[in-house]
Length: 309
Image 1 (tube, rainbow, N blue to C red):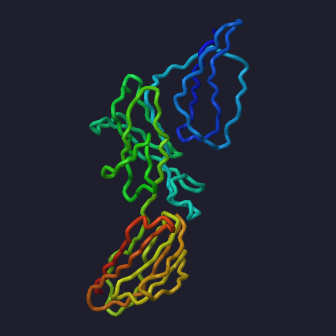
Image 2 (cartoon, rainbow, N blue to C red; image 1 turned 135 degrees about the vertical axis):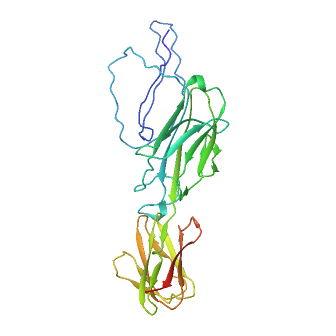
Image 3 (cartoon, helix red, strand yellow; image 1 turned 30 degrees about the horizontal axis):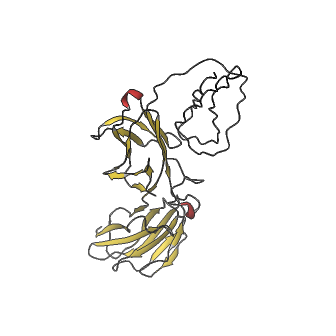
């Protein structure tokens, strides 16, 4: 009888995407009436596309083996889902052209008590791979945990093996179950960073003098921003789109919605005449992605002015 289908071992970085067809049929019987070997068992099937795969010609069967415990493994990719260069691609849960991979994030496997079993860091393509050997994969509950740096949040909530993730403080966890010869994922999780909105340092200025205060906005997602000001010492605001000193004046309480691209920096300049008592200048910036709602609440930045020499 023909031999059963064997093992195909494909060793690639966890974030690689290539199209492939895997043939795992058993061998044909060597004599008339001999039985054909059974096909190999399919352990994981993932649809991938990239166009970099080439067919490898094999002259014939060759002996050899590679042995590794066949436990439970989990893979995924972390990326910045900010619509870099094209607003429509923000918050869509896919890594589109121009959106950066998130390297160096800590990813861990936790046991049922939340204790770490192993951890890794996402690679240069945002990919990660964690694996429990066969002896340690016996149906027990586990969690995949991603430690999220301050200021970052999910763009679109995702599930792992059909189970949604849950936020745990500064981390996100996805429940799973460890079984031999099983794969969880790939978890394709997009993240977006809170935009930067910073006031200048507090200052002491001579009473009666005039100063121009510069606020800085750093766009981390493609979308729109709106500036608003409080009543008080601010009578006009100058928007400098490229931070070059070439400004347009705005005097209403709220500005129009201005389009911004992820990575873009804006400067907002505020002319102010210093009085005889302390003053606080506050400006509020609000960011939105059209069609996606408001990713964050309005951000306020303030500078305190004190009369002095």
